[in-house]
Length: 214
Image (cartoon, rainbow, N blue to C red; front, side, top):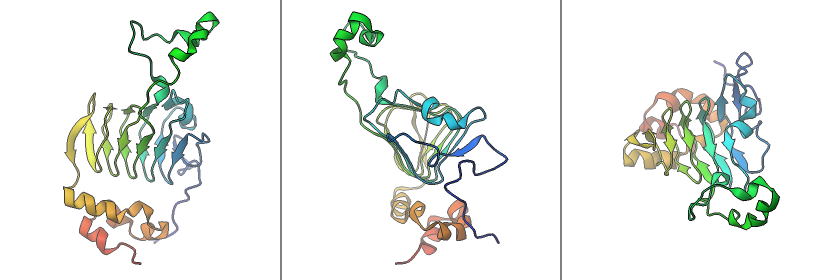
């Protein structure tokens, strides 16, 4: 059996599938952090993830994506730079049009934001899911295709719809707590490689039995 782990620094983990990229070796922005093995799949141009999939990212808020996340085609992260004023008669951002309108840039600077967008580990995003600014998505969550995520998502929850609502949880509360403690995504990659079958198809009890000791 091949026990050599996959290389997390390879841009295209499948040489015959250029549509799949690992995000950690791809992203260059200091405002985006991605854990090892998280990937994005897009038949058009997956290497444009930073500009096509992370929108209105003018800072200082960050996008943080954990390890072992799977992002389907056209997943979008809307960042706080998309905000407009809503307390006056018009929401139009006149100052960005330039000319004398730019004298009023204070009207659109310092708009309230929701902070960093945080994605946990082992999260699966379906086709064309959209995540709004400042959302926190828990470990092991599943975001259904076409969902618009406007609120935080608990660990191991499955959500869907617009706005996304809880469909069900993947495990009961006790199992979720145990999975958080196990945090298999932080295990040495050699140990993950040795126990892939349990990680992918075993029970929480089996995962506990094969957890590294010490």
